[in-house]
Image 1 (cartoon, rainbow, N blue to C red):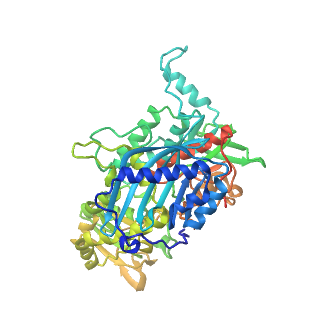
Image 2: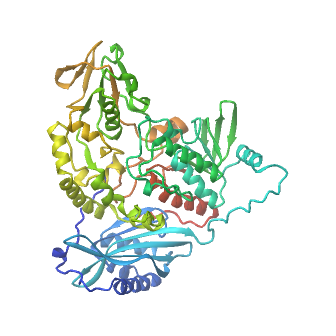
Image 3: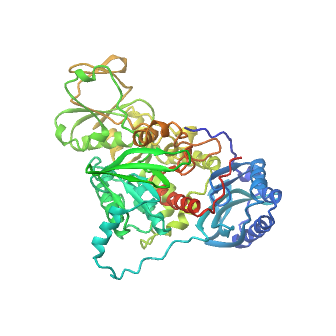
Amino acid sequence: MYDFKYNHALPTTDVLGIDIPADADPQKEAQGIVDSLSNVLAKGDAQGFADLFLDYGVWRDKLSFTWDYRTFNFRPAILKAATDLFPTTKATNFKFLAPAPKIDRPYPDYAQLQFIVSFETEAVNASAVANAVLTKDGWKLYTLHTVAEKLKQFPEIPPADGHMTGAISWENQRAQDVDSVEPEVLIIGGGQNGLALAARLNALGMKNLIIDHAEEIGDVWKKRYEYLSLHFPHWADDLPYFPYPKHWPTYTPSQKQGIYMQWYASALELNVWTKSSVAKAEQDEQGNWTVVIDKEGKEARTLHPKQVVMATSLCGTPMLPDVPGMSDFKGTIRHSTAHDSSRDFVGKKVCVVGTSSSGFDTAYDCARRGIDVTLLQRSPTYIMSLTHSVPRIIGNYGPDAEQKRPGLEEQDRLFFATPTGPGEEFGRRNAKILEDLDRPLLDALHARGLRTWRGQRNTGNSTLGQTRNGGFYFDAGACEHIINGNIKVEPGYIERFTENKVILSGGRERDFDLVVFATGFTNTIDSVRSTLGDKIADQVTPIWGIDDEGEFKTAYRETGVPNLWIFVGYLPYTRFHSKLLAMRLKALKEGITQAPYTA
């Protein structure tokens, strides 16, 4: 899952032997770098481009040069990629974008000049986020993130006029259009990823259809445990073209998020077939699809989309461990996905297995109801208080004192620009800072037997979501109940069940009426397999995690199966990556994309 192979160094002032002067003019210094960048790119000068970077600099690209997600770590890799790519892709017309260039000092020993520019190639309008450091040899790029913003020949289409000119009402016409659609792109899954991608494709004039087995759009959130609210402020969660209304609650209740998704599908006129699923999917040798849809259990529809997108979430199927004696146990055993409330277990004893977010939430719900609850922990959890983590992780998305929020496009450019290697270095520092800020909380949890850690490679939460899809908890209230003893913590795992007992590792006997396994899910490939069949699933490359360069495996990229795409991820990822995947599908349709760069 985590195959990144590089060790990066942070270019601190003590390593560089120089600091950025206090009176440095960010605009002037940035202009000098942009002039150099523009000059070498206009000429296709690969060596000159590589020389703009530190020896351990990083160039990350999304579609603008490589038509893929690629990261080139260190100057030799940058030179190789530039040598291969520049003969066919010229970048010109560099202009500054907001926010204005600035000298950023996130740590006492590290300072960088950060700026954003737009540019264009023959095919796309693009942007670049640059972070440069001052060396004894002048300014050098530490990181450069280039990303396609729009297709030059195929911009988003203007909105419809809306005047009623047909023989039937708008509502009836919409119903007919949805029922009879012949999609170019079939999207399997109507959660946030499927909805956002459909909206982006609509904006590019590509016919598409979402199918989902749920009764209604939004059920993916509305039918989760009733006490769930999103664990982070909604500031970075808006879906494209449809921001949350003002005065929306900071932490969105899951049922309310489901309603927002219903609004979204309706307002943006997305073509959706609910209560529908894939009955059969086949692909011929040319990569052409034939997909039979079981539509609402009433009829079979055969579709021939050019592209199929699996947007069925990061999660495969619930993982319920096969523990000896489960069938003998007289109490209740369920996975957290089947546990919507603890109200029926007031006055009884509950064991929650697993200490990721759903485990903490379930234990918290029990504690609030006065239920005797034990949290069973097998491996350490990365824990952060919301007080300290929110400002450091998504504070730039938050409202100002007058409740005005910054532009999402602007913030997304910055948020998604950091390559994995430098991100690890920043992550280690942030994890240490947060650990120090949260020291009283963590010490109190440790005293109650809960084990914590700093995440993979000591990088905090920065890579856990991208590799394990869990293993962390933003404290939404459970920690206080652990500290005051309302949630007991025990180490280990369930060894076996008897008729009336739960035997924990080491032979500890416990009495529980309910055992909730908050043990996560299998990989997304299981959803692909159950939906599209073994023949197709066996060809799909590993999904999610970080590859050796530092990019996502398979998600948003080539899958190993022609014309099949995997679109999964968290809400901010949904908004950002939906634009890129929609552009790529449109470019493929129109024949303006090059083959992905693979060297």
